Image 1 (cartoon, rainbow, N blue to C red):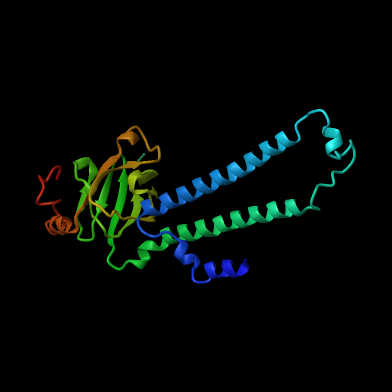
Image 2 (tube, rainbow, N blue to C red):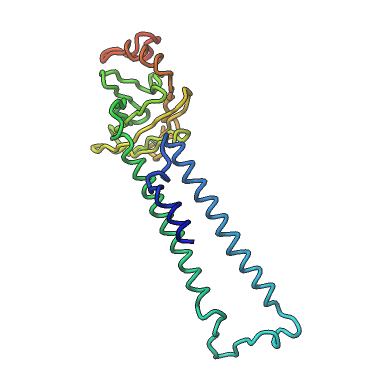
Length: 247
Ligand code: CUA
């Protein structure tokens, strides 16, 4: 038995079990692992309880069948504590494995941008009530001017999030991105989308009367289309290819 177990474990390191990829992939994996394990444990526990309730239900002849403890007598149990030991050990193994695995997975989420050399660095600045996206070339897309937050598909986008005024929280739920935007401080997060698409970034911290309107369009573009668009942006004037709205 141990031979089989070790041959399964030996070539497989904890790193192989950690899901990699976009945040969507990682958080979906966490969701499914917890859902499946939780359902399995629930079925075992509830099934066992129901089975015991049925087995020891009140019926004529029960007293003769089982040597039930009397009032004040300590129950002896069947297997000298083996069941208790087994259930404790199984629970401990499951819980500790889950903690280690989840910690490793979240550690990957935390450290993923550092492992990518060609990440696009964008500073996200919240204000009442909109978002600014500061690109490395100095171009700033402002949501209240109708300028979307454009990012390339299939590339790590490293975000540094802060705020100009009060506490906000930057989030794109479909891409599993969420990070505090706090004045005077920065928080780090990242996003990555395998395919082009359009999403909505929102504020997730009540910040005033315009909180629920504090959105920004997020456009994930093909790498070529993004490069072409980005080459036409500059520090002083928004994007030349679009209709220069707002500036
Ligand atoms: Cu900004 Cu809510």
